[in-house]
Image (cartoon, rainbow, N blue to C red; front, side, top):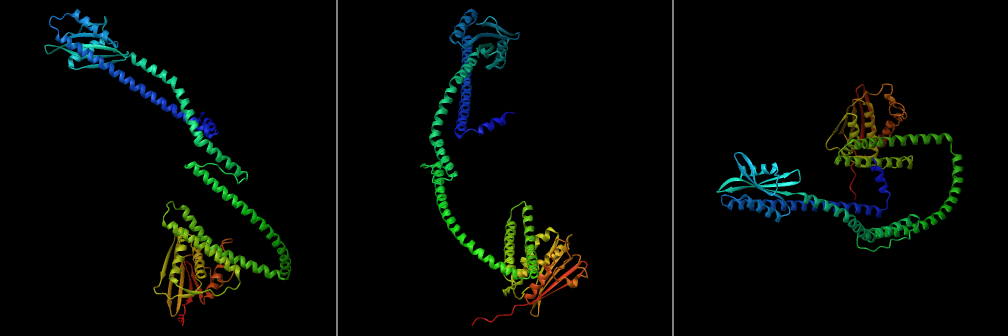
Length: 512
């Protein structure tokens, strides 16, 4: 429950303090693990030596007993056992045990009270005819080997060793570790901290000081560090950045002074211009001004709305698409194309009331394909199936491609609004007798009969309030008319068809 405050307190420490704390913990952990491993390895080595001593002693006693002639002098055997036990301080007891049908019986021993575990080990060694090792929970280890007489197993020799030395060794090792580990941790920490101060802390302090001075606006500050390592690279990069900032600041101040002087001149000119403009504004008729502003604003809003709706559809699809694939990149490209068209329309509407003729030979098949690509995502989202039926070998037309494309998109958007529950949309292109016909057919609810004769007039709309300006079809009609074509509509419940007839391009004679 106190972990978070501790972590918070550690984070408030300086870099040097945190590094020193980390070093202390790391060194203490390494020394502790090393001490544990060394003590464990040494304990195992001592235990192996004790067990090997017990086994060799038991084998030697068994061989001696086998070589003695009958009758065996048990007193002499007892003296021999005492001599052997006295030569090895780690041996606790040595016992000679006879094993017969009645069980295990003690023949000679260095101890007056033989343990039951020793008799059981001797019996087991005699039965199995192999060495038996038993670790008792009482801190002793029992080793038993079988004894032979004339090739027959007659009993066993049991050697008991004490494991208390191992426990004493473990205790002493821990004491030594607890005594010398803090000294080693302190010395290593001081040594590493000294190196860290020379290699890290002092250079970082210089870099920090230079950054602090730069933060106060002193861009002449520099980190005086020259080293062929990462910290040297950081210092060099910081110095280069500060030098660029200093130069930029000087240049910016000069530009501000120049701009301020120029601004004073411009302000004077602006005051004079304001008086001239004010006089002109007083001369304009208020009604004409409001009408012009209103028409321009409505036209711009409608023309901008079509690409923005498509952009919204693409952005929405991109956000909902979990996988990034080539289609996403293609859609983003279309978004960029729409943004460019919006900018072009705004410039067109605001440049001149009467635009110059900017038509050029245009292939209809790619234009219709672009219209389909642009509209398809929003049509798919509205569950509207799009069909493109473009005749082969279409003649080109003299057209402003951007204007004509936006006019077709106006018609497609009207069809989309007419089918909120889904449906189908077909764009068919044919040609005959020097003219090209574009038919856009949808399966929407149709146009009311009373509105059909006036559908191309400005401000006439079938959409709810707030969803349309009533200028879309009027603008489309004007675009078609500027291209020398005509547009008609036929509508009934469940089917509406807009038909655009355009003249094919006149072949131009080759340049002389």
